[in-house]
Amino acid sequence: MADLPEVQMTAMAVRPDTDVETAETPPPIDPELLEEAQRQIQAASPNEAINEALRRLVLEERNKRRAAMEYLWKMHDEGRFDYSHFEAARE
Image (cartoon, rainbow, N blue to C red; front, side):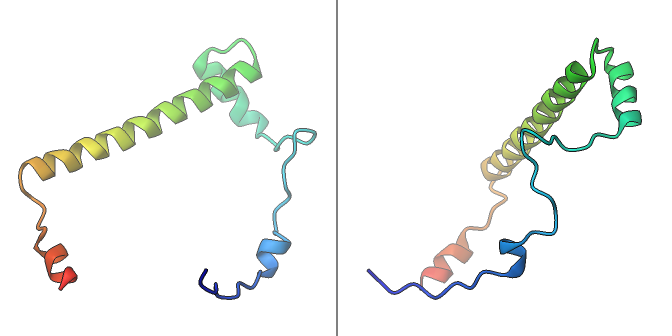
């Protein structure tokens, strides 16, 4: 096995500036923002509003990634990628 380079831990990695959230201490939530989200989503409870907001965020991000992949495949199918650079790099 090859020798791996020595890795030095930084103070940030050892002692991060931010508090670590645990199940016992949930992150603080802006009460006004939560109230507005609950109203807009028409959620029955704050927990329902948070879960619905997270669900919508996850779906939105998935759709962005899916659209980006479809665009890349479209570009590929249209021959818009120049693969000659890969061949030059092999030489």
